[in-house]
Length: 197
Length: 283
Image 1: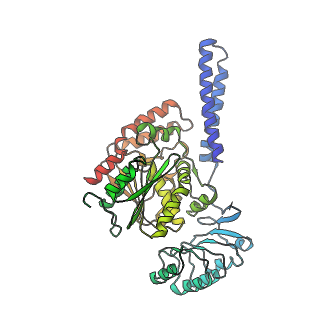
Image 2: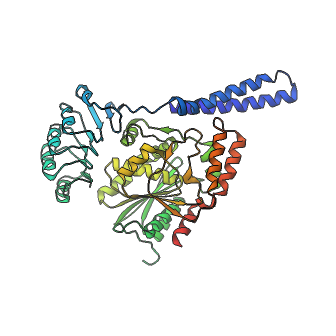
Image 3: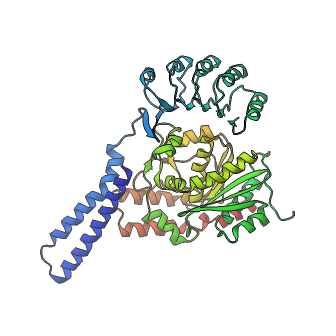
């Protein structure tokens, strides 16, 4: 879309330049039917202006979920959306990346993720998730990357998660009650583990 | 080790850190043949240049820090190079990129949009740069500092975001005279992701940080906090002048408008140079 806009814009500028040249040539060689290059110039102007008008007036940013396939995997983003119900997650299959860093996400919301056996990356920053929610996540065996910044989780919940998810590699526990000791020992247990603390 | 600047990651952000990072930004303009030696001599950093297309970054490291210093385009230190970038290459659509890059940035929210030109610059440099950073960070976890002047500052911000999406903790992002990178939603997400860890140096006389307020495609850009003002306001009416100019021209970029816009900007140009920022800091 943006490539299209950019092409359109440049094309418009090109047409304007061409029309200007044509106008000058007509003016000095044979000054008749001068309206032809002028019309062409106006067409060019309209083409140039189209992306500007479209992005400013017509297009509004859609705050619905964003879904895209990346290397054959489904990436789904609900962070910052303007919808309320997460129920549709129960019917979505094979999500690989799920971003739902919203304050209205609770332990109950995580129940909807049961059976997401391909889920590798989960963003729960700024949610109300607690240790109880982590117990639900313990069943998602593919989980490698988990963000819990600002969530109500503790060492107990996290330890339980570590026991169930040996594949977990990346963790964001900034602004939580999780202790540095637990994190350091988890990191030391296997190379390549990374934590934002 | 006299004469070598030090970078103290334990301290709160202060002018010594800013001077160190500012110097790194200045050295980032040096070519690959002389840059590494100067990084070693002045900053005590072992540095290597990663360069793709028009985007370049020096990845410097010692035992206590990893420093990424971005520079702008090759000819960015010259006024003509900057003009090319600003006007003829005004690719300032606000976008969300595709692919993994898109996933990393939509984490800011489904409504977040970013400057398409800066984003493609980051996309160009990311893979080779990340290999180096990942290798160094894996060898020893150290505070990571990301800095850049002007266009480099804009890329520094985007780079910091993506590093943290890859779970590499960014200690601080410090920019000098950097333009805006995205819309309001994006700026708010940066504040949540980097609380008190973004320092955006702005000379009061520098016009670039106010761009692309006058963007001819979209003016819904917003800055990340926190702003550190150096110098004095020379002409606060300049921005208003620019704004009204942009208003008048809504739908076309004619040569005449480009030139008058440009002459306005040129007046604010000396304060945009990296040397000016360093001089202000050292005062």
